[in-house]
Length: 288
Image 1: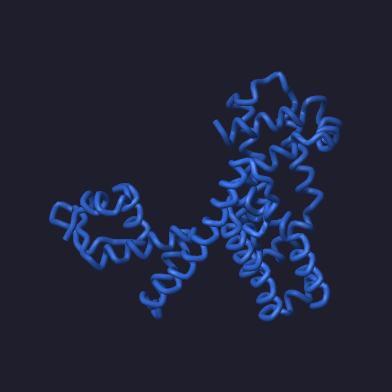
Image 2: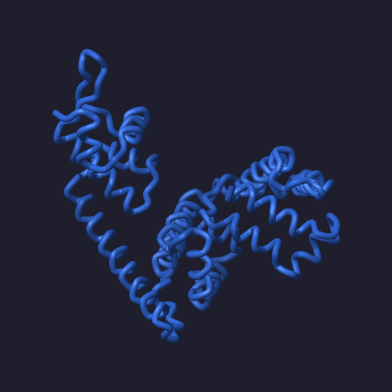
């Protein structure tokens, strides 16, 4: 048996993280001492190792907990699948490292094969087969959906670049899109409800931005400004139906406010300099 500090030293996982895993019932110690100290056995360590493999593959803790609690969870088969996925990730990273090495040497290289959306495209093809009713309902016909998939294929290099920029990697983007497909019907119902209230939502959005830019002499990092911005961000998350948008999403929003074409539109609506002011406030919020 090992204490929590011994497990932390052995695995590199912090004591606080192990405590959190216990709190959410992801990894409970096999025993507790009379004083309440956690004790872990070899089976606990095997489970922790399994969790770390899943984390390396960018699975969320909630997803990991659901998987390892399945009655038919086969540890050996999962190891094989994890090995396959990690091998694919390794190969992908190796390609990116080689590409960066060439670019660092000043070599001209416009290769985009490292940014491959084939797994996402495969997920779309699978969705077409398993959820044909949803496809027809929201795309009008299977043929229209097939045209959509074809456009994704044709625009793959650009879309892959945007995916990396927004989500950090094609893998994370693909997982987010697959999750959207898995909950497609629910998301569309929420979207339909929002469309019914679009006027009210637009009015609320405009009111919040009007408050933010009402006095642009205020320091963009001040508590008053940041408080309004927090409301805007929360409102935006609700409008996005709390979908996973990637770590780079708000940086892309900031860039959009710095785009010259968008500047003219925003400044005309909220006053000269409004676009730059909003971008500055957002930078303070997300990068302070």
